[in-house]
Amino acid sequence: MQPDTSAIPIDPCKHCGTGAPVDVHFCPRCDRILTLGRHGDYFTFFGLRRRLRLDLNDLEQRFRALSRLFHPDYFHNSSSTERLASLERSSYLNDAFRTLRDPMARLEYLLKLEGFTPKESHDATTKVPQGLLEEVFELNEELEAIQDMRAEGASAAAIALRLSAARRPIEANLARHEEQLHARMSEHDARLEAGDPEGQREALAELRTLLLERTYLMNLLATVRREVSAGEAAAS
Amino acid sequence: MAYSDKVVDHFNNPRNVGSLPKQDPTVGTGLVGAPECGDVMKLQVRVNPDTGVIDEAKFKTFGCGSAIASSSLATEWLKGKTVDQALAIKNTDIVAELALPPVKIHCSVLAEDAIKAAIADYKQKQEAGQAS
Ligand code: FES
Image (cartoon, rainbow over all chains, first blue to last red):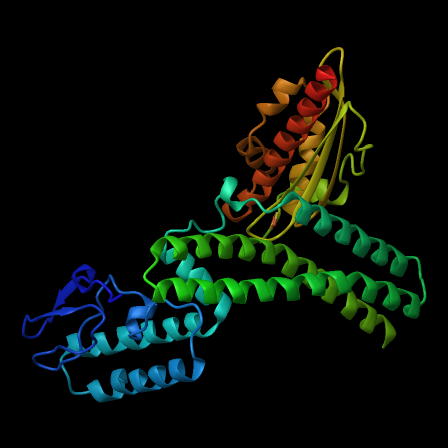
């Protein structure tokens, strides 16, 4: 399916007044750099479709090409409007690149673009399965027991053993999550290619749940890492 | 970011830390999580089935200082309240009492959610008990 170009807002060139879609960086008529339109997004900025699996080499090439084109040095002698435009485009480009090159940041960004409420809202859609909460809670209790062991002067070997047993299920869980995330991302992209917006939204809804669950697991892993380094500090 | 004195007090001397027997029909358990940070909180109440008054409340929170303070405060407030009064506790009451800054509001939401979940669990057990 071709993207519906009629939906892309038009911004006039400040210099010659020619209208240009927001995903175009230079005026089609006078070739001057355009001020940054407000309606584009990171994907259109790079000339990409809203895919979740991106070829990072390709992304980087696009990034380099565009940063060369927008580089403020080239606009030294241009009008102030153009100088401003080059600065705006350069900084937007950097934000866009930083977000899109990181698969998780990219996913969060796309979810927001597609209207999946950000994760701070406390409604039914931000709930994760009770079973996961129970697992996370139990593992936290186990980590707390390990902290107590340390406080009571247990041997470093005994602590390390118990800690490695505690982190195993967390890491296994995260690995499984990663797999599911990638599978759903591919699914989303396939639906996008097939022009199936319904299937696309289904995949996004599942991705959002997976991302929420990941927050809990990452938090847990951070606690494990703190414990590991506490052990190392104690050993040295 | 500076914590208010009340938060520090609850954090250093948390009230009612611990747990109650989950299977007990007079105990309601709420286990909730904050999607923003991945912190988890468990809050339990024991209700006197004759009076409907909460006579014991316990919590265990793996989270930030504000979440610990919020749940500690919640357990204090819960004791002596009826189930319906308990449901009237709002996170904004906790925010006001502990003087939580805007970035810590979600920590108080967690406590309100935990109260609601614990009461819902208790009610469900009661209904199940009556049905059989
Ligand atoms: S920061 Fe997560 S509950 Fe406070």
